[in-house]
Amino acid sequence: MKQAVILAGGKGTRLKERLGELPKPLIRIGSRPLLGHHLALCEKYGFSDVLLLLGHGAEKIRQYINEEQKPGLQLRCIVEPRSLGTAGAVFAARHLLAERFLVLYGDLMIRMDLDRLWRAHESMRADATLVVHPNDHPVDSDLVEVDKEGWVRAFHTKPHPPDLFYQNLVNAAVYVVDRNALEPFAALPTPLDFGKDLFPLMLDKGRRLLGYRTPEYIKDIGTPDRYDRVCAEFEKGVIERSALDHPQPAVFLDRDGTLNEEVDGVTRPDQLRLLPGVAEAIRMLNHHGIRVIVVTNQPVVAKGFCTEADIEMIHRKLETLLGREHAFVDRIYYCPHHPDRGFPGERQDLKVECECRKPKPGLIRRAMQELNIDPNMSWVIGDSTVDIATARNSGLPSILVRTGHKGLDGRQPVEADVAFDSLVEAACYVVKKTGRQP
Figure 1 (tube, helix red, strand yellow):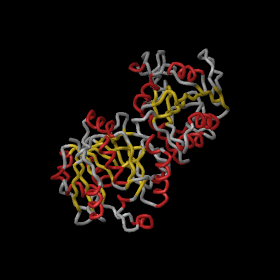
Figure 2 (tube, rainbow, N blue to C red):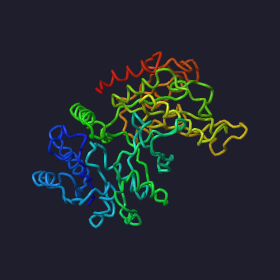
Figure 3 (cartoon, one colour):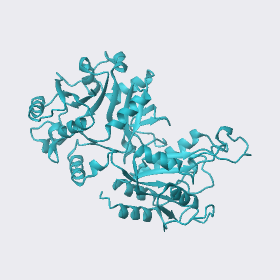
Figure 4 (cartoon, one colour):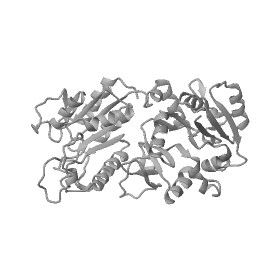
């Protein structure tokens, strides 16, 4: 029996005009309260043991629980005597915790594939897994740094230094936690918060924290504007179709010459400069729920011109520049290999014939599996014939943008399905073809 712990003790002070006398978890989204959506999510994914940690408005929530018939769920309520913080409330109920449990915040609207999250935690043998995702305002958000395997390496609290290049990854406040990993921290003073207090301390003590990346729907309803937006997106079906158990539309974007200026191999962050209109195009795709995935060959690593750490920093600059203009990419995949030898300082371990170097389809196939991409609603966009051939080898339609190489490189004997002068025009075409509403 899988357990979910729902933190439902908030007052909802900023939502007072919408709540009236209701506690925040009982505010309605569509035909049911927010808490009802949480319970339905738990039921859908088999979290039949549900522990509700209550504070403000506990009696009204209990009344709702008693009236709401959920035969597939075992519901138990614990009332905090005072505000203990998110982690403090969980510690106070540790005598009721399962060996492994899910944590949901009662003031978030959540629609995600919880089976995928649970499997990721189990397969990586993490002590705790934090759901992380990009957002359109990383400049004023607390950020999480993860390595290429997904392990959390640092937490970066706002405000951020102006010269910092960062991954656009924000703690989404959905967790899977192993109870035993918490025991050494049980005596910490309260109030104690998961994101600000407990997880940074666990990381300092060498605990294994996994960052689970997902583009799925997890949004705060804590202000009238945010609540209204969530309600509107619910009515349009945006929330439901964002879950990864539904196939996702996507664009696969080349990097050099498509997103940034072509300089014959970017090896340092200072060489990366966005092309005009790129952030606008990606922001448009974000707004319409189309996954934005970068797939790029980076043979400069195999040739010894730079390291994988350099590539990661270049990609952080890319994410930072986009984030400053309220745009984000969902994933970046790159191939570091190159088959030709003879470069001073080259990496022998990367001199291989791989399946991920474009025009082979390895990077795209990996992304399609990890993000449940719908091939019938996805495109490859790039500036070279290699990108067009990659689309063909992946079974996807191709879009040439007349930037960078402008399709004149002559490396592959192919023609694009359609061509545009800019990424903005290409994004408009994709949005129209998908019929997606923002």
